Length: 227
Image 1 (cartoon, rainbow, N blue to C red):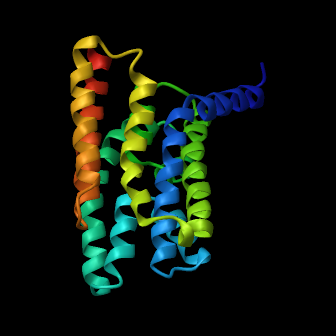
Image 2 (cartoon, rainbow, N blue to C red):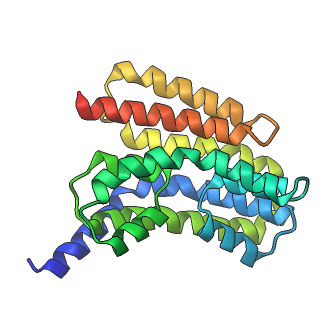
């Protein structure tokens, strides 16, 4: 099989293998798009934010905060929320350091918590596979943002309540077959916390819920990989 054919096959496997996680990004993107539309953002601004930031929690802070806080405060909050990307990036470098600089930059642009968890499960794949995983999740988030921005003004604000639980469920269902039964209570417990926190009022509810989800998912993934 030629190198190009192998790359295409790996890319396709990455796209298909990340389907569950990518599906979870759709309601999250819709929620952000709807929030931005309710706040008076136009379509171009919403899409630019999703392309340039690609971090739902930080984008939610931006939408909510720009109407009430200074730009410096909003940027500071966004940076604090995304501080977790430093250790994630260091860990991802162990997987991607065998690729060229151009590939590493593209992969870094699409690196999120859930995407890293998917990459970490298969650390020896080709660069095409990882591009497939990253592109699948990014496109789903962008499509969600587009849909949310277009119909956001007629959607109830309460739609946001379902975004974090939807992402958690998509990740959990994708992994239930491989987790031992003794770990299911952990997943269920974190799911309840995520659902509860996502219903709380305030800017910090979403980041805290996401942090809980990331921590539990990463710990379980690491234990499964070393078990």
